[in-house]
Length: 312
Image (cartoon, rainbow, N blue to C red):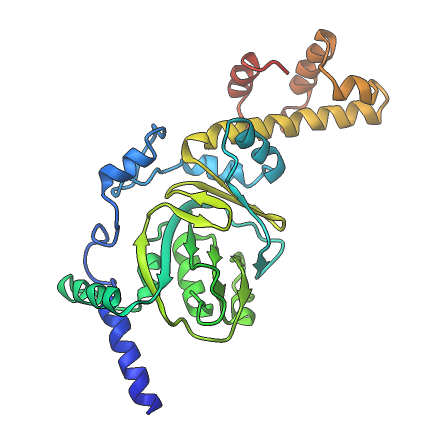
């Protein structure tokens, strides 16, 4: 009886899969809708319309803090971009990259039947939870809303985690669970932010959307958002805000490094550093930058342009 059940399960998953065929069919919103929802993004896009944040910005994002980035977003009116309360495979491995989103819902027979028929028509094969994985590219982060499901909500185990890491070089963020913690822990450089770990297999869920807007706890995530993480949680930065957030966070870090050094050697006191800087301190800061070019994570041209628009 168990063998027969597994055969039926495999048949269902195969019908619902997508390994074969064009991934443009896998997307449940059109390219036009994707561009509409992310219309403030003016850079390159993937074929499906998802914003393509440059690789160099993703590399720089690895060195900024969530607190500084969150403040920039909050001040700009983006107040629903952070989510905490996670369990991780490794608490010292950040997950950073462009969001590729997936939306799961509880299974329902009529909806499942329609999806199965469409899967037949499009010639798809493979497990449905491999559908988003097949669409991943280097630098992507697989972000999935699995409605917080733990038991039977395990979107990946160590095998799929290996496939994800080989394709992206990053990790995953799931409002759901994962299995095979010990196996995933052996994948050097990989991390998963999940609600919990569970030994069960994925059951009674339907993949209703790929690269659609999703909700992760109290945060909204759009395809192409910049994902950054720390043990405290995950921040989803709208693609069009990525460069501003990164540059501002980098500036704050450099400014703080200058302030720390000045306080340590007694050049200035905390009142002078924590309040609006005088013109003399600003000039001292610029001289200090010239003397310490290794402190700059951005180009001096970018920094000068940025500082010309700041009120300090």
